[in-house]
Every structure is written in structure tokens, then in C-alpha cells.
Amino acid sequence: MTLFKNAQHVILEAGIKAGIPHEVIEILQTPENCIHAELDIELDSGESIRVDAYRSQHNSLLGPYKGGIRMSEYVTPDEVKALALWMMIKTAVVDLPYGGGKGGVHIDPKKLSEREVEKVARAYARALAPYIGEDRDIPAPDVNTNSAIIDIMCDEYEKVTGRRGYATFTGKSLGNHGLRGRTEATGLGGFYALLKLHDHFLQEKNSREITVAVQGMGNVGYYFTRFALDRGYRVVALSDSKGAIYDPQGIVLDDLMQCKKERGSLEGCGKSIPNEELLELDVDILVPSAIEDVITTDNAAKIKARYILELANGPISGGADDILHKRGVVVIPDILANAGGVLGSYLEWKQNKEGVVYEEMDNYAFIKDRIDTSFEEMIHTQKELLVSYRLAAYVHALRRLERAYTKKSIDR
Ligand code: GLU
Image (tube, rainbow, N blue to C red; front, top):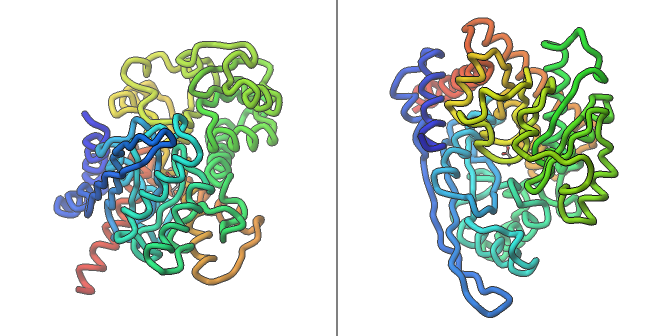
């Protein structure tokens, strides 16, 4: 099953559990609008390439489309559509006035110069300009994009539309109307989810006794690890795309980051293990923080962690999810565990619209409050229906979406 088909299937499964009418399920399964653009980019060498770029605007029942833009050689229309659907659920889980969207550019930015990446960002913003806006569709960073790239897109959007652009993009730099705390918001939200997981499932242990393995050292994995270590959790393994490090005594993050900076990757920065082995370590909590489909039917039976906190979007394939659920592994799903990013985005958008600047402490408190509340709602729904925690979070989100649908039908 493709990623998108699987995502649609989960909507169906949860929709039936939630008692949602079939016509509403179908609406929630179907993208409202899919944009495909071909970007012509001139490389530093003078050669021109054509790059496929996408934006899926999945659903706008709760508000404007919202979701990041990624750049990667793995981007496909199917992947973008799945990610946009998940954004619809994610914003509903944490009760934000947003729909779901996602963008992707099919290119590996690590193989480009800074100037070439800037050209891609500008071309993408130009192609998307007619379809986005502060009350229509609000992009943000995602895999391989960051505040510098978002600033460039925002600038290009302003140039081509002649409109003020900064409430149309979130995840901007602080000097460009960004939010205090947005950079670390996804990792921070994941950390608050870790605290709830600890409270609900591992009360008998203190943080030092809880072992954690983090797969992926991008923005999300890095900040999550930092917050977890500061609170005393024993992070014993870390990895990036090239190497994995394992130290049963607990890793020292600053040393590893310094080494990664010098060598360009974690490879050889400590006691190395193969990347696949990290996922199979005997730890309490496994935290996949990189990309989709790293836990599949091939390795699901070998996972020893009792708890999985999904900080990446879609790291567990559909088949693997069933295997883990049957084995009693508790999965705290992406749509809740990594919602800190979009919660930060919401505050950024709101402060931009209001023309004010919020305090970092208040931003942290807002993210904590929404993660805590949604976690409790998920636990409550799980007890009510005795389904997996993922399905429980979906049911909660779908009920919210159905209410919006019914209200819209009555208003019409
Ligand atoms: N890319 C992030 C996500 O997948 C953030 C999206 C946003 O802030 O709009 O949740």
C-alpha cells in the first residue's frame, strides 16, 4: 500500500470507530487541491535543470491549509499527499484553527550550493504564490528546510504579489518576524509528550532509569535530545543518516555535535553501531525523528523498546503498526508527539497578524498546555474504545472535524 493509501485507510478505520458518516469520511480522505509545478533552475555550472515541486492542500474545514515544505530526493506526489492528510489530523488533534497542507520539492539540497538552494526556494515561492496567503495556506519548514529558506520564500512572495508576506509563512528567523522558541518547538513538544508518557506509563522509574534511543539528528532529534538530557533521561543512542552511536552509560550531546561538525556526520564519533541496530536496541523508549517508513514489517518484530515516541512524520508503516500494537508496544503517534512545531507556527502567525511579539516563556507554556491536554484526550478516547493510541488520537481529531463539517452544512 502506498503512503497515501495507507493514510486514507487509517482515516477510514478511525472514522468507523468514531461513527463518522461515510460521506464525511470520503471528504476527509480526499485532497481539495494538488498543485504540481516544474521549476527551472540554473545551476552554478550554467547547466539548467527541471525540478518537480508539489503542494497538497488537503482539507480546510478547520481553517487555512497549514504545513511545511520539504526538499528531498524522496519527495513524490504520493508522499506529499499523505503528509498533508496527516497535517489535517495533527492540527485537529491539538485544536488549532487550521486545515492540512504540505509541500515538497524533489531535490536533494545537500548536493546544491547555497545559491542554488536559494534559486529553488525562490522558484517554489513564485510557483506557489497564487495559491497561498495568510488566510488561505500558510507554509512552514520541514525536512531539509529552515528559517533561512523560509525567509527567502517570504521575500520572493512579497516581490511577486506586492503583499506583506510574513503572516503567510511561519518558521521565519527571529529578525524577520519569527517566533521566540519556534526553532526548538517540535523537539520541545516531543519532550513534553515524553513527560506525559513517563507520567502515564513509567511512573515507577525516575528519569535516570529511563533509557532512550533517538534516530535522526536533524532539528527535531537534536532539540528533543537536548531537553531530554537536561531533564536527566538516559539517552544511550543517537544517529544521523550516516552513522549511529551507542553508549549504555548515556551519550554526551555537546561532544557528539562537535564531532559531527568536524566530520560532517556522526560516523566514527563514538562506539558505532549499524543504523538499523539502533532501532532494535533494548531501550525503554525509541524516538524515530527522521523520515517515514523506518519501522516496517521487516523489522517490527525485532523492536525491543516498549514505547515509541514518533517525532518524524509516519516513521512506522501501516503493517508494522499492527504488529507493534499486537505485541503491546505503546506508540505515541506523530500527529500528537510532533505537533509542537505547528503549535509554535500558530503563535508566530497570530503574533504576526496582531503585530505583537510574544515572550518565549509564554510560547513554551502554550505548547506544553496543548500537548498535555491532547495527550489526556487521547488517553481518555483510548480507554473508551480500547484501540491503539494512534487510532484514539485520530478518533478525537475526526470528531472535531465532523463537528466543523456539520456546522458548515447548517450555516450554508
Ligand atoms: N513541518 C512541521 C510538521 O510536520 C511543521 C508544520 C507547520 O508548522 O506548519 O508538523
